[in-house]
Each structure stands twice: as C-alpha cells, then as structure tokens.
Image: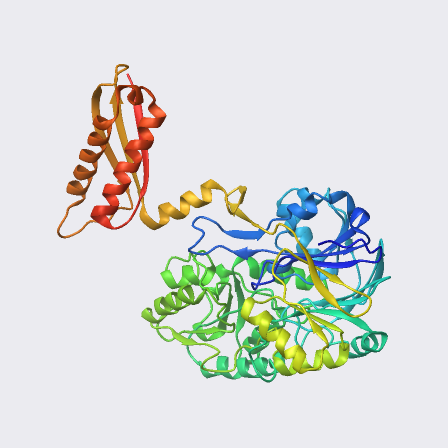
Length: 560
C-alpha cells in the first residue's frame, strides 16, 4: 500500500532499526510520484565472527540511490561512526550535498580526504542551533548532550507537521564540554505540536538516569591518584572528548603528563582543538618521549577499549607495541562500556593484561564510565517536553523497540510504531502513523578495497569456509574419459582426530571421488561440468559421513 496524499510525510529507516548502530534514515515528503527525500545520518557497524574478513558493514542505499534525482541532501546529527562512518563509502552512489556542524564537518572532511573526495562533495558547515530549508523540509538543529561534541536533534517541519528526530542523546546537567540540553527549544516544540518523535532506544531497559560526565571526572582523579608508582593507561572511546578532557585533568591533577596512543586519539583531539576544545591542557607527550618519563609521571590515553585486535591497547597487551610497555605495578582503567558482541574480545584483552601483572579497573569496579544514551527517567522527561502524538523507537534491537513502544504508551503517547529496516511509515497530520510499504534494506560489506553485497556468493562461500574448511579434488582425464591421474586432494581447515589421521581421511575421500567418476556414463564423463558436480556431491556426502560436517568441496577435472 502506498499513499497518494500530496502532503504525505514518510519515515523510512534503512539501518539502525532492529539493531544498534549502522544508522541511515530517510524522510520523504509529497505524493509518491514526486516525493522529495532527505537522509539523516549515514553510519556503519563493525564486522564480527559471522563476517570473516569484513571490517565494516553499512546499509545498502539502493532504494534512495534509485531516487537520487529526488534526494535533496544529507544531514548528520553527530560524528559517531555509526552515524557518519559510511559517508565516504556511499557518497558516490548518492552524490548529494551534506550539512553538519563544525566538529562533525571536520571529521567528515578528514575522511573524505582519505578517499580523494574532498573536492567533489558539497559539504555545508553549519552553526549549532541553525535553521535552514531543504526543499519542502524546514530543519532546525536542537542542542542535546551525548558522549561526543555537538550532538544535535533535528526538528523536521513540513506542511504535514513537525517530526522530532532525536539522534543519540542523554540528559547531562554537567556535560563538561558543550552546552546542556536545550530544554526551551524542546518544550516550545511540544507546545507547537510534535506529530512524531523518532527516538533512541538503547537504554530503555535501564532504570533511572545515565549519569553525568562530571562524576566520572571526579572518580578518574581519585583512581589515577591511587597509583603512586606505576604507569597508568586509560582506555576510552576517542570520540568522547569530554572523557578525554577528564582523563587529561586526572593526569594533570596527579602530576602526570599525557601520551596519546592510537590513531583515533590523535584524529579526535585534532578535531576537538579545531573547534576550540582541549585548549587549556598541556601539550601531549609523544610515544618516544614518554619512555623517558618516570612511570609515576606518565598517563597513556589509549584506543582499543573494545578489544579490537589492531588497536593500541591490544598491541600493548601482546607486548608488541613499539613504544609502550605495561606490566606489574601498572594500571589500566577501562573508562568505557562493553558493547554487546564485543564481550569475548574485551575479556581476552583483559586476561592478557592480567597475565602481564597489570591491575585492571572497569566500570564494574568503580564509577569510571557513564552511558551516552538515555535511561527510562530521561526518556520520560523527553516525552514530557516534546509531547508527541506518535512514538517511533529506533536505535535498538527488536526487544528494545518493543519495550520503548510499551513505555511510550505508559507515558500516554497515543500511538506508536515499531519499525524494521525497510518499513516505510506514513506520519499523518491527524497525529496517526502506520507502515504503508516496504523498501529493500540489505547490507553492504567493506571487504578490503571492495564493497560487496552481504548476500553475495563470495560472502556465503566465506562463511562456509570459516565453518567447515575446504577440500580441493584434482583429477586428470583423457578425451576418451579415462582417468589418467589422481584424485589428488588438498585440504584447509580440516581437523585431525586421534582415531583417524588426516591422511586416512583424505584417502577415504579420494577413494569416493574415484568411485563417483567410475559411476559416470561415458557421455557424462565428456561433460566436465556435470562430472565435477557429481564428484563434488559424492565427496561432500562422504566427508559428512565420516566427520559430521560438510566442507566446501572444489573439484577440478583437467582434460589432457
């Protein structure tokens, strides 16, 4: 079902709904035949064990790519990777102008430079609290607080009415950097009338409030001060500039100098200084210089709090960082949370540090971290300010969205819609909304230098290889169909068993390959493609009978 209403206002998430991360949201206005679109955010998520060899994953923009002539522009709410990390990867498919505040624009510009796009992209750097028109959309930035500088909500006005898109946010009365939440703007919108609020659901199961950065700073000063003799390292998200400021102040309050370790730390501090932040701190010490400082006089500010294998802290834990060594008597403070899915990597990292004698302090031990997302009391406050007619939860897994919708109903919000990526929601002027259509909403994998569809054969093959390995069967045959040589088998990722050696396993599969070839009729032997498929099936069945798994089988018949 689609709408012919000339005042039709649509919301369409292509990423970030039914998942946390990888946000890409579309707003459309007008009848379907002449609907104009804007994009709000364009982010990535990270590969895991289910996507071997894949570093980044991003939404498939094919729906809006096919409507590029009606795409007016892209507005970025803030600079986290899950909201802007896909811009450089996808811009050539979209070719639209971009609007962002100074901190976000600096980081976008830096990323575009990496991809040779800085001279092609029309990037508009706008002030906080800006208000501007994009076709039928009147867009107003609303200052919020989050775990990165310059987080903005968007008030999106059309002839059909006003939608508040919160982006990521929390309510922090003392955010340390930047302004606090613009309550007057939010309450003014509530009085004006908000048709729908598209809102962050990350912490909907958490009671109370998320806490303030000011409290974290106080605790970091205490914890750093407790180590009187050893080195201290703080692992934090580099994008949380307020946290970096707190770590720096904790170091300086305890007579330590700060050394940045990790490329993202240097990139984010440069972006922060470009917009006037981190101006009143001592100069950072280089990694080479830090080695000459007494242990009690240095603090390392490191990337890698999520256990990323190539990040600075992982290399330190492995003992192969070229400049930084930590051991007995030293302390690592994880001033960050465990992102779901990263648990195993983080615990492995912490175990490696523990083996080196390093003391580990996490948010479970001391209040050295607060979330950047709203808990239930903060959500209730936002709904009280905005008073939307419709709640549209996003930025959460399915259970988060369902719980958020139920909570909104408890708060007397008349309507709610729980969306999946690809659901097109019509938001109507009478204060109702419903899903009216479905759009394609796949995923793209960044695989080295290639951008590949998540459902591509190569991705399916790689998952199979990761699960059960590969066996190659090579045979030489004559033009008359006689077996001249082989079968010769090579394997990768096949285990050995105490009761059956790898050689015995391969011999059994080779015998089955030869039997399969012998069973072929003379006519089918001359059809090499058919013969290869029959042998592949036979070997796969035999492997499954012996091993209980079906490895990837590649058969090559060479006619001599």
